[in-house]
Image (cartoon, rainbow, N blue to C red):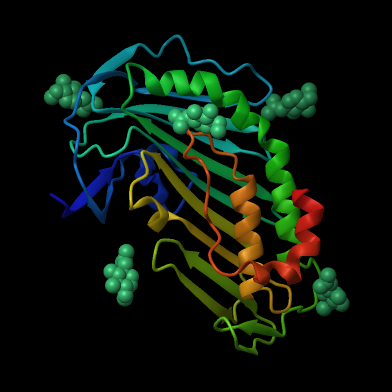
Length: 297
Ligand SMILES: *[C@@H]1O[C@H](CO)[C@@H](O)[C@H](O)[C@H]1NC(C)=O
Ligand SMILES: *[C@@H]1O[C@H](CO)[C@@H](O)[C@H](O)[C@H]1NC(C)=O
Ligand SMILES: *[C@@H]1O[C@H](CO)[C@@H](O)[C@H](O)[C@H]1NC(C)=O
Ligand SMILES: *[C@@H]1O[C@H](CO)[C@@H](O)[C@H](O)[C@H]1NC(C)=O
Ligand SMILES: *[C@@H]1O[C@H](CO)[C@@H](O)[C@H](O)[C@H]1NC(C)=O
């Protein structure tokens, strides 16, 4: 029976944490989203590492501390690791989740935040959950952590691309106009432009001028599961604040989404990692294609 239900994700709802800095608090948060799903699987318990937190540097070989010895049986195992791609440090946290409505075998969510000068920031909070076998989260972490550390350069390239489209380091005002919807723009003297997109079948995009001087930044969230659940595209989100003239255009938005979809770097260990952060006609890319080619090829 297909019915309106709720999925709760204890770990994956880190997505909803407004600050990605406070991992440990975020881990305790839960949030619900409404979705349609068909529950096909009864919960089988697997063994998961719990009560294990550690900090590491990208320079070190990253190992799970020997002091982590507590295991719990649960429906899903989870690991989240917050990576600071500028400072080159990270922190991990293992946990287990007993939510009874398991609707995916593996799920990966990333929350990433980029900010520009004077405080350059590049942070990603990766959250993985699995219901596949004993210790699946620790196995995933051991197998893939070097991949996530290796994303350092790729994410720097992504930030440079974003910077070339969205950021002008001039002290003088550079925004004169911002889009307020896909086709019309308005005066925005000395302000900044904003763009925000939420995915799903009925994806929405908002365009605005903000009079305040908010620092230029980009935030995105991508959620993928195997098997695919209908809720996952609804959780995809891209938001940015930019200070170049008319930088919140439909074309720039699509360009930024394309760049993120190409460079986000997540691994789900299945074939369902492909992102589809682009909706709308390809011709929209024409005006930013020259800049994108430079970075994506
Ligand atoms: C990593 O190693 C480099 C070069 O040895 C050093 O400059 C840097 O401070 C180290 N980073 C951390 C976070 O330890
Ligand atoms: C999950 O539920 C099982 C059985 O009720 C319990 O033994 C276990 O401690 C729970 N695990 C967690 C992480 O809450
Ligand atoms: C940056 O802003 C300055 C001052 O408004 C302007 O002269 C310059 O053309 C801008 N640069 C870019 C790349 O938009
Ligand atoms: C999308 O919008 C249409 C028309 O408003 C509605 O019928 C449909 O249920 C919506 N789909 C979702 C997934 O919300
Ligand atoms: C995943 O993709 C590879 C290459 O396209 C294919 O060989 C493999 O069978 C696929 N695996 C699954 C589980 O679909």
